[in-house]
Image 1 (cartoon, helix red, strand yellow):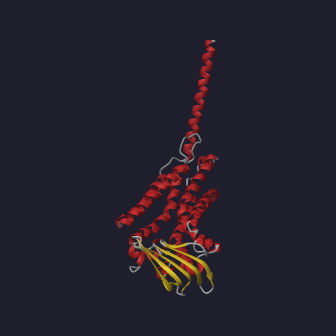
Image 2: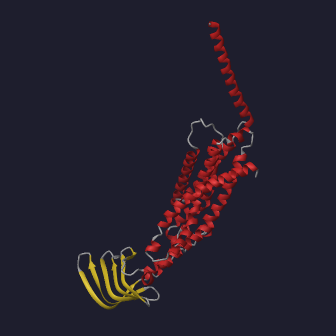
Image 3: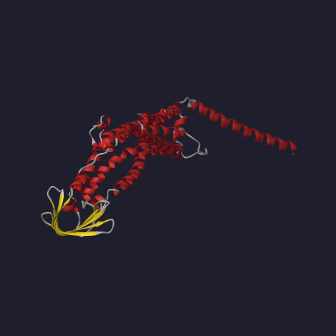
Length: 393
């Protein structure tokens, strides 16, 4: 790159990072706060929480990159125009590629980075995060639930223990089970323990109250009672993978025996097209930003701020593409639209950048000639007014 191109690339890179880091931090914090129950519900350490937060951060990066690029490009070029740097470059007769080339190179590198992150790094991190959450909840009763605190294991199932002893022994058990729509069950037991397999809670010396929907209550005392935890332990101990967690190879050739794919094959189709299309948005948005803000303009010219215009167009394209992805989820025939939206936008922007323009020096000489003629006309008018006033006197 030439010295001027390196200067523009450096300024765009600095502004890109300035825009990226705050936006990425805000989105990351909102995503992490949604996982705070890993600490509050499962009793995990703060270190485990921050490990989970570190796994979430790279997964949101590809979605933020295109918009940070828009802000970086438009803000940099607008500042250069306000500081008269773009007019000087324009008046010197420099090629327009001096401005566009470094920006498009940065956008191309970010597109490659986004493709690698979305298709290879992000799926592995998502699987690791799901496995970590599943492992945290796998042995919830015997090692996680705090003493003298109600905990919801799942919808309709609540547990409280008074004391936890060594050997997986639990004292003062209370279990409220309202998962069955026909009746509610409440268990009391002096002590109990979760078996080593984690599939059953064995309660001793207690009673169970069964309340039907018509109000009838029956009470049964027991010396020993086994509460089945098979479904609960399998649900919490197994990481369920969805379309967004799959690798690109799996999306290209899904396993027809996979249970999640059998339930929602349309989500896998939509996810595949999303992976193959959204990585290019950074380059498309960079072209739009150049169209809006690459020209030198007068400070007196009334216009919408380039950042507002570029962000508005970028958001519109982003929403259109997401709409096409939802159409693909309904019918595979809409798949070409997913690629048509960014492709057409990029083509129009590239044509506007490459359209025939008058040479810079010619435009400069025309501007100088126009200003000179205005100045001569002003001087001539003043002399004419002076002569008229002198003749009258």
